[in-house]
Length: 166
Image 1 (cartoon, rainbow, N blue to C red):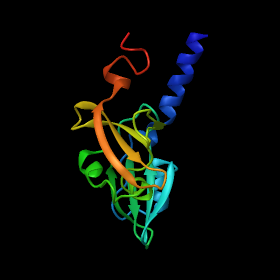
Image 2 (image 1 turned 60 degrees about the horizontal axis):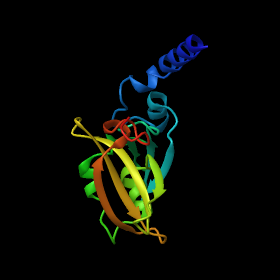
Image 3 (image 1 turned 180 degrees about the horizontal axis):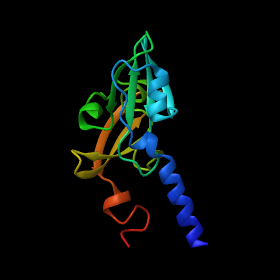
């Protein structure tokens, strides 16, 4: 049975190579060309006249990409959005849930901590391609960002999360 799981995992990995390891979308590409290169987006957001195609990585991913299409349907930019620079654009008591989605996309997980009266949107990311961090964006029930904090990503640095480092 384990051999079948291994073979299945290998087939899945190879089937994704064209979107994972192919050339990135180029400025000027059409929406169809972006989707040919990267597949269907995990979410689509509107930002004024621009359309944002979000490519979220899933639970274990540390990089999330956003394609920005202009009103003419052509790619204006394609960038990794889980970065310190992008998180710094989120301003407590000013930014909204919609701003968060437009700037960094959907989180790795959403939870509520007992010590904080807000929803916690957690983004596991690789800072400077070196450190495994978790950025938490706290959002109140009205959709306003109330704070941000980052720290080690326990999924990678402390034994994978809920196993207490064992």
